[in-house]
Amino acid sequence: MRQVVEGVWRVTFALPLGIDHVHCYFLRGSEGAWTLVDTGLGVADAEQRWTPVLAKLGGRIERIVITHFHPDHVGGAADVAAITGAPVFQGRDDYAQCVRAWADDRQQRLLSEFMRAHGVPERELVRIDHESAALRDQVRFASDPHLLDPGDRIDGWEIHRLRGHADGHICLLRDGVLVAGDAILGDITPTVGLYPRCRPDPLADYLGSLQTLIELAPRVAVAGHGSVIVSPVERARAILAHHGERLERTAAALSEQPRSAYEVSLELFEAHLPPAQRRFAVAEALAHLERLADDGKAARLERNGRIAYVRR
Ligand SMILES: [Zn+2]
Image (cartoon, rainbow, N blue to C red; front, side):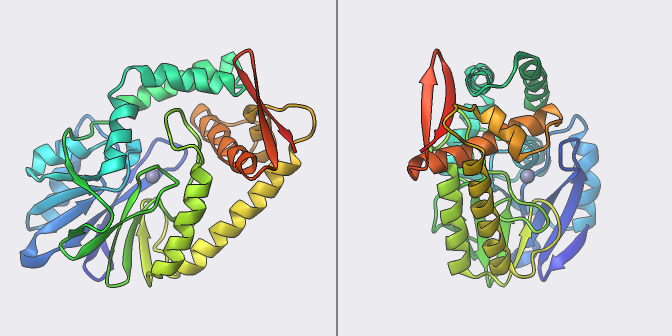
């Protein structure tokens, strides 16, 4: 555990996902109490994981804030809340999506049907299903958290909603320091994907959020993965450019011949990917295809429950 910005301490846990670690942050509050932002994946030995961290920190955890509902951020929330007795705060939209994703039995089937409709072959679907089911076991979100809206304040930190990586993703900003979750990352580009029951054009949401971020102009950002972002505005501009390029590559992958999002994903990303990565690749290709479709540069065709895209 170390202090990465004045008053902001970081603890890092290993992740068995495509990305190998996740950061959680402790924000020092008034009177020696702390706000914990994000909780990592749920693990069987949560006490063993958190007790030494909390002992080293000293002072009590006053509250837990969740930036978004992805397993590596919300997964440990119920356990840490139980260990510390601290209340959990989560974005209003994000909590609704969290419940849909993790507490609704239909979600797994919907995701599977969605991936099939977008061209994912059966042999890969089986692997994706298997891995999604395993991930569900590592999500223990806290029920009925305090709901946060944009503009709310927590101990001087202002809540901003930066949609895109997740529909209701929230960030905390105070004195030029942005606790960004995965809204912006230093070393990799946050994934932006289309999923069942999510907002229809997540890439448009995300590009808008990057503009908002540029306007907010934080002087430094700390994020869920990777290094401290010393020039967040510059980084936001670089990610905007990246998506501009990826939109061009996506458009170039289309022709008059209908192609599924799966086929497009094979062109945009490596052909051989582990199941979770393939799911991200298809969802990411879809986010770009839907952006192009909304822009009139692609058309979506639906036949016999299969969806494909053509150039326009
Ligand atoms: Zn993450």
